[in-house]
Image (spheres, rainbow, N blue to C red):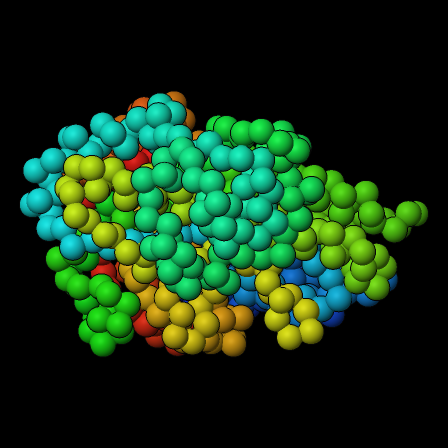
Length: 479
């Protein structure tokens, strides 16, 4: 079924320099003046808004090429598609050959999702809810967490990710980690995408975090961050794929703990630096691309490409550890308050990252890998269901899936003068949001997001993912 006023919509998009067609819930878009660029496809449920700015950003991204060699060979977007602040739409996926595009990842490198479950009933949890919340507020908001580590541990963290950090902690545990079950953390590494380890280089990290000796007290580590990042307590309401859920250790009635965060200030440091480096490396005396998106070419400067990928990996390793420590702080508090709670890891995966594929790379910006049989975590808003999925490896969408529902209203729109602050209109009446700033509840209100069920249904129908379990929110921490 076609959207209403489709012809009028397509004509309006055409006036903005976009060549757009529509078929079976998929918009195909390219720049009218870039006939050689690949046509990008956007999967959108019927009734979802078509944002010209996001389509233009995706078409610009698909047309990125380097004059010395390097191009995008495939581009697409997932149903949480919406405009991005840095010129790249959220939900974008590009496959490149002979080039990488630092700004296609941006500064929130290895932002991702992590999911734990616990054999704790909702009644047991709520009986001590206030005690749990106060201790977590201390850790997440007031700095009572202790993630002190040696300079050598920080270097290993950046260089090797989770395995390097674990080795260092086994040699010299300190901070809150002295209470952790390090053997459990080591075993859970298999449930982290890529084992939580990429080819980093600690010398590319911010200098203040990698001294030659002594102790490091990193104020950014084990923090949630702003924007749409969160830590949420959930309940496993419904299991759809019982065989797979059993294999993964997921059962109806369990509590679940979902974490959405990334590489924090380290990602901002590396992402911003390499956005500027890519621009500075553009061949002299050649016109800048209209999109202001600058690729790095393996033909023009292979060392620069290799350096960028290693820098991105360095920030990605930090992102893996950041989510691990956010979860471990929560797990330690669970053990203090509810006693014998194991809360095993189900999976941890990124959705802002460049990964090798074939002879080139796939870069995902607000989209997660969804390879066959791989767990996929797709959150809704803090007033809607979230989903544990399994990937089906659809090559038409570069083996990807959405990383959430996607915004439908901007933070500015929700906070502007005259905007409704009515709890019911914002969908906040039954939302238990733990935050120190009231504006965060408004900015992240359920009304700001697209309907998650439609996002899930259209991806299942497209053969991208299948549902394993449905989870409902209990309470959400927003920094």
